[in-house]
Structure formats: structure tokens, C-alpha cells
View (tube, helix red, strand yellow):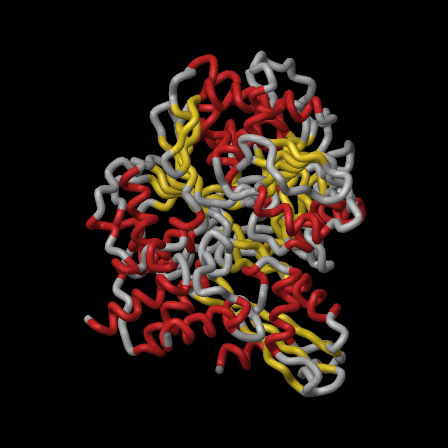
Length: 82
Length: 530
């Protein structure tokens, strides 16, 4: 949950410019909606790498992992376990 | 010989009925299907009152119905107006009001936003819902009627419609950033587009065997090449799903899997691939032509591209939305020691460009001047803005004898010894970021609209990969009364995401020049240093 909350907070406040994470549901689509655009992807990847001390390999830069906050949290947890 | 854009489709449908015209995310339409569906939709729109000269809005993601909508409007002699599907609702509403869109092709998930934008009704009378096969429950803004796509098409005949438009009629309006704080609609006629399309199809030898990608959004003028050059040749255009374009590997895989032969995009889309992948490892033999436009391509990445597709022809195309493409330059070798950007080149056939110095005289070799463009590709003006139009569409300064308009690009150029123009920069505050054209003044106007803001300056920080990063400096009437995130949200409500400053810094006061103006140079220098 901690990973999911941190991701939700970052996307809501930094990419959606919202007050807090309540602006974003954990299952809200990030891509089709325009919440995350090309610049957003890069900022998000930098955030994940700095905050969680992982490297997002190039082969994981695919839409499947960026569908929702929940998908992203699963990716981070897998990378942390690796 | 086609004199209307829609005739490119009808002619190819007669010649190549079973060839694929357009494909997107696993779905496709043949030329016969695209021709038939767009006629059916045109008849449905005509029944709803759309006629010659009427503006038809397209407010939906890039998809097969969006393309059907374009041709339906054109077949009626109507004007298609693509609205950025990701635009904030006030911006979409501005465009709908500005050019008086009564008929909109959209999707049902946008109905809520449209009701909020037009609580007491508005210009919208007919909304065609591309994702509805049968009538649904939800309503549009007051006074509007909803038409389900499936019902609208099934009810109509696909028998050809006789053309009513002539080639100087408007074909489409593309909204672009305006320095006064509101987007402005660039009006282009069938002839404006066809002159460019005919040039491009001939110059690049596009045939029915080509497979073109469409990377640019439909409200971006690069899409004119993709859609209509393909239609003219009977080729296939494959729409890049917006999700795919965000990720380097899926984007590269799309080029491989779809066997794309002709690619056209802003350089930053190619740089995204080059910085993440070794393209030399990918089977890209079928890619025969790579075109790029919209911003300067940094030489080090262009060199990587040259090495990745040694067999493909590379062309740098140049031209503001107002002129279509007006110059071009073929990039052959990229020497290892070269650092200066490649030229924008020389005028396309049947187009003239020239540079004038500050005294209004023709520039010699090596002299810096503003680039002017004249010819049939030059726009008809900005919708509803005669003064702004008159500022840029001027009597050809070199020829006083008869009416002959030239477009002042605002771009500073220099002619080199080989007869090619080099792009040097802008005369004004317009910048490019990821190929998007941005008027810094438009962002400043939005910030000034906030009641708490006393002073605002928006500057562009050069960036090798995306062109420019946008940064804002703001001084408040009462320090502490407004937070940065409130200002960011305020911008996001009014501006497309690519125009929202990446960073907003609050200051007690902004630095001034000796004449009392905000010192933007000092702010840029400071931002670059930090």
C-alpha cells in the first residue's frame, strides 16, 4: 500500500496538479485519459527510480505497466523483489 | 484531376476499392468502405442541416470514425475542425464557440464535460456519437440532439454526393496557440492543402504500395500529409494509437509490425526511440522515407538516425501551419564532426520563399532576415481575426503592381552559399516544445487572468531533447495568498498540458530592464544556471 500511495500522491499532485492524492482513484486509467503524457512518463520513471531505488528497464516501458496506479505499484514491487 | 480533398478518396476508391485505406489498432477500412461510410455520414449530417461552409467539429480520439468524419465533412463542402481530444474543456468550448460549431462528432464519455461547458445550451445542435451503435441514455447540452453512429450510417444511402465546393473554399481549420491568450484558427482551403499534397506525393514518389504512419494528432498539420498523400496514392495510412506513441519499444515495434514505409513526425518522437533503443537491431528495411518537421533536429540524434536507417531517404521539412510545408532539405550524410543543425533548405516546387532584412530589402547570402512565403499553400487567414490576419498576410513587398499576398513567418533565417536557408530563431515569443507551437504570451495572459497575480513572465529554457522547457515566474499582489499548485491547476484548466509551465517560481518582484520591462533574459539566464 505504501508504494501505491506514494505513486498516487506523486501523479495526483505533480502530474494532475491536484491538492492531494484523493483526486486520483487507484484504478483510474492514466493513459487514455491524458493524465500521463509523454513528458509525464519520463517524470514518473525518474520518480520511481529515485524514490524506490530501482531501475526501470527499457523492456518495462510498455503501456501494460502504466494503465493505473495499481499496475504501476505491481511493477515497482516486482522490480524491488528482483 | 482532383480539385477537392474528398476527391482524392473517391478517385482512389474507384481505382483501388479493396485496398486498405486506413488502419488503426487492428481495425481497418478499405477505400470502398471509407468512401461509402463517409458518404453515409455526410448524408446524415446533411439531414441534420450541415451544408457547404459549415464547420464540423471532431472531438474524439484518433480512430477510424475520426477519419470517416473528416471525409464526411469534406464531401458536403463543409469545414472540418479537429479539436485536441486531450484539451481542457474550456479550450474545447472556446473553439466550438469561436468558429460556431453546430455539429460535433464526439464520443459519449465527453458528454458530461460538454454539458458543463454549455449549461444553458450553446452553438451545438447535433452531436454524433462515434461509440454509440444505438441510441443511449445520456443527454448532451440543452438544445442539442444526439445521433448514434450506427443508426446514422445505417439510415443513409452510400450513393455518391455531387461535389458542391470549389477549391478556394475552406477545407479545415487548425487551432494553434495565439499570443493574445486565445487559440487562433488557421483556415486552409482545398487548394492550400492539395498544392502541398500533390507536391509531396510527386516529390517523394508515394505509390499504392506504400504504408504511411500517422503519428501526429489530427489537429496538428503534419497529419495532412499522412492522410491525404496516402489517399491520393491509394496507399494505406496506419494511425499510431496515442498510447503506443508514449513508449519507445511499442512505438518501434509498431513501425516493424505494420511494415511502415513512410514515417513523418516531429524530431522529438524519433529522439524518444533513438535514446531508448538501438534501432540498428530492428528489421527496418521496409522504411524507405523518414520525414521530420516542426522543430530543429539536434545533429547528434540525426546522426544516430542516419546510422539506424542507412537505406532510407531523410528529409527535413519546414513550414508553419499557415503555409503547409514550404521548404525542404534532404539530409544525406551526417559527418562525424558536424555540429551545426541542417538547413530547412529551399522552396518546394510551385512555392516561393524569400528573406527580407529590417530595411525591407531582399537579403544577400549570409544576411539575417525574416522569411516570407508566397504561393497556393498559404492560408486564407485566421478565423474571425481580420486584424491579426492582416498583420501576417501582407502585400508582397517586392511587387506593388497587383494584389499578391505573402505570409510573414516571423522566422529568422539566413541564406547559405549553396542556396539553402538556415533557421535561426523567432522574431517574437513563439517557441516549440516537443514540436508543439507555443506562444509564451498566451501562457502569460492566463497567469495574469488569475486575480492574485501581479506580474508574470513565461520563458523557454532550451532543451536538447524536447526543444524547450517552459518555466514561469510570478509575483503576487499579496505574497503567500496563492500557492504554486493553485497556479498550476489554474493553467491546467485553461491550457493544453504541453503549455502548462513545468515549473512556476514565486517571487516578490520580477527583475526589470532599464526601460521598465520585465527582464526575460535575466530570468532565462537564471533558470539555465539553476
